[in-house]
Amino acid sequence: MSRDALPFVVALHREQERVGQRRPPDRHSWYEATVIGMGKAEADRIRDRGAVEINRLGDQAVTLHGEVSVIDGDIARLDQEPVRGVHRELLNAEEAEQRQTAIAATIAGATRAGSLKHHRVSRMMRWAVRLIPLIDWPVLTMFSADIFNLPWDAALEGGNIVRLLTSVTFGFLGTVVLAAALHKAGTELRQFKNDQGGVAWPSGRGALLTTLLLGGVLSISVGAAVLMGFRVLTEALAAETGLAGGIILGLFFSCVVATANSVVLLTVFRDGSLLTNEVEHLQRQLVPIRMRRLRLQQQRDELVVRIGECIGRAEQLHAETLARMALPIEISHRIVATSRSLHQGCGWSAELLRPDRGAFGLFAPLVTGDVATLDQSLERIAALRIPTDHEGHSAISQSADTPAVIPASIADTPAPGITSAA
Image (cartoon, rainbow, N blue to C red; front, side, top):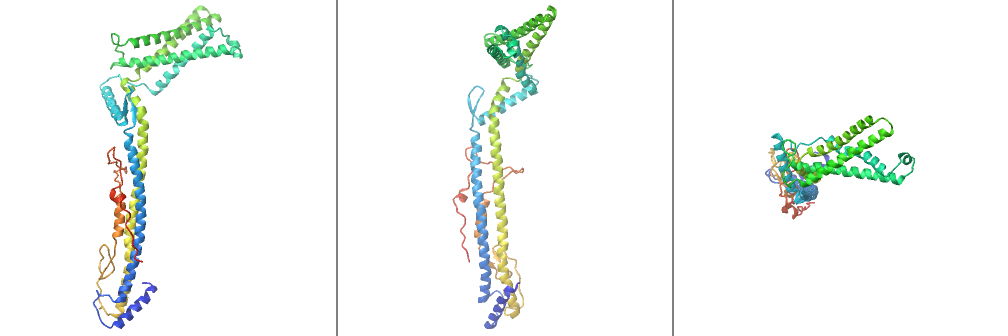
């Protein structure tokens, strides 16, 4: 006990001398009541300050909970994002997810059964089939230059720019058309792909369009090979290397061009099926939606953690406030006990008590403190707790059409009032 308590001890001792009568320990004199009342008043001020801090944390938690509700609404609306199907039908994201899952299960089942229908080629081969048709560009450009009578030596020196650009443009246009035709023909052939990875060609008029397309592509491919052979043969004869050597070189490079175009066609054909095409079509639209959902869920988890931190800090502050409230009342009881030990007007024995919740002091009668304000403030913020799983992720328990909302008892009820006893 500090020196500051000495005047109170002396005053209590003198009061007992003035009274001059013994009294039970559970009865306080007027000045004892004043001293204990001063301790209770200080405890009330501590309680009010603690309630203000808890309410401030509660307001922060309410704001964070509102942000969680907004994010829950955004997550729920992601299921209604429009997605266009492979046949241009309009789906929402949830229906597209279900459709993709069903198709993926079908593909996995067929693959486990030994089917090669849905086999995919490697990523490197997919890039290769985009680049291989470029070998037709110089062939078609040189053939166009022959048609437009372009002297290459003059073109390299800066002359005949118009003929040069025309030849290059025609060569590039032919290359693009051939590449597009090869990819289109390979894609169209997938509809006739069987479980062994071959072509189950239908009879009748069902494959007429595909047959015409394939015939045109093969004709163009053969034409490009012939042009390559013709160009090589012409250059060989001009270089006087002999007819046999020119024919051999021409046939070789013709086979190179034909093989390259065939590789493009067959690779595109073998790369999946109609079902894998649909899965890729849906996946291209669903991946951005899934990424947005993941980002929103991460933001939600961060907000839930911050709400939990506010609640944890409020619980800690509640316990600390109760402990601080007990201190001034215990000091007042020690002052009273010291003065009684000197004047012995209340007997020589003292029974120390263990205070219950909301009761403070050392001996009877204990001082009852009003902690309802603290409890209400803590209940207000504790009601905002959002449960999380064992990995720390918050669960969205609301339906897709009903985002999380702040409980009405919390949103419509202001923070508990604080009436200072000061």
